[in-house]
Each structure stands twice: as C-alpha cells, then as structure tokens.
Length: 83
Image 1 (tube, rainbow, N blue to C red):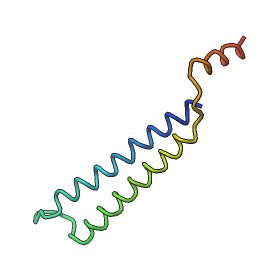
Image 2 (cartoon, helix red, strand yellow):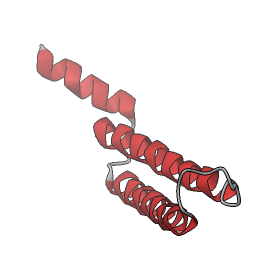
Image 3 (tube, helix red, strand yellow):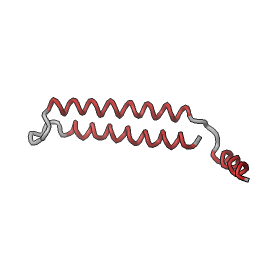
Image 4 (cartoon, helix red, strand yellow):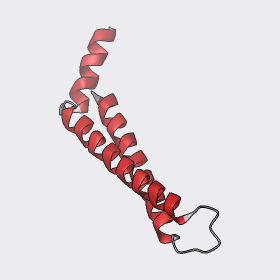
C-alpha cells in the first residue's frame, strides 16, 4: 500500500534529523560558553544518535514489508471499485 511507503519515507526523514541533531551537538561539544554540562551533552549525543539509527532501521523494515505493486495498477483497481 502506498501509505506504508509514505510512512517509511517520513520515518527516514525523522531518523536523519535526529542524527543531524546529534551531529550538531557533537560538533559544539568543546564550546566553553555552552549552557549544558559536558556530561549531559554526551548523553544527549548518544541518545539522539541511537534513536535516529533505530528510527531509520524501523523505516527500512516498514518499507521492506510494504507491497511492491505498481501504483498504476492499484489506481485502476480503485477506480473500478468506485463505479
């Protein structure tokens, strides 16, 4: 179904964004002007990185499980049921 493909794509985007957040925190880990203690920053880097990777793996599994049918054939079947 096409909804599963869209769902997996959105999950992939969310996972990529979480990894991006982890990278941004990692990039600024040496800033002395940070409002977050270094230990807490490391915890959040690990959390966002692992959560992002888990969401991307889940998105791949959802994408893999979705049917591989051609969308045009599916649309024709939907038109026939509406008549």
